[in-house]
Length: 85
View 1 (cartoon, rainbow, N blue to C red):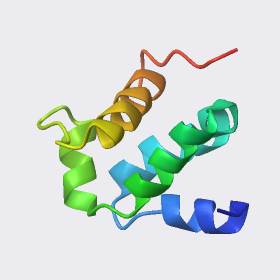
View 2 (cartoon, rainbow, N blue to C red):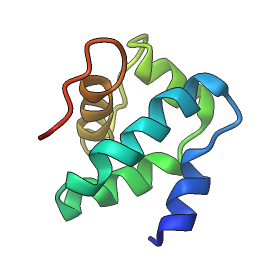
View 3 (cartoon, rainbow, N blue to C red):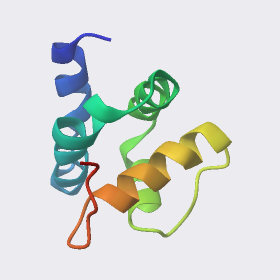
View 4 (cartoon, rainbow, N blue to C red):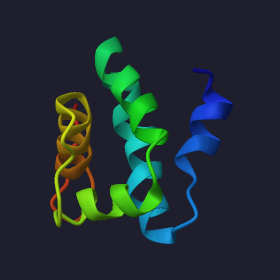
């Protein structure tokens, strides 16, 4: 997926999601393995309400691929973020 599509796909209808996804896209996405990048693309196809529930730790995705990328996003965004060096 090209950079412009990733950028616009990561911009959501909810500010809360933008505040999670945009830093992840800028800081973490470039460091991911190809399989995780593909999982991120799959994540961008999900509904905003589902992603919001996942990132707020209210629910977890049933799909293991999505669970992995959601976990990575959770670990690398927010006040306790640990970005790869």
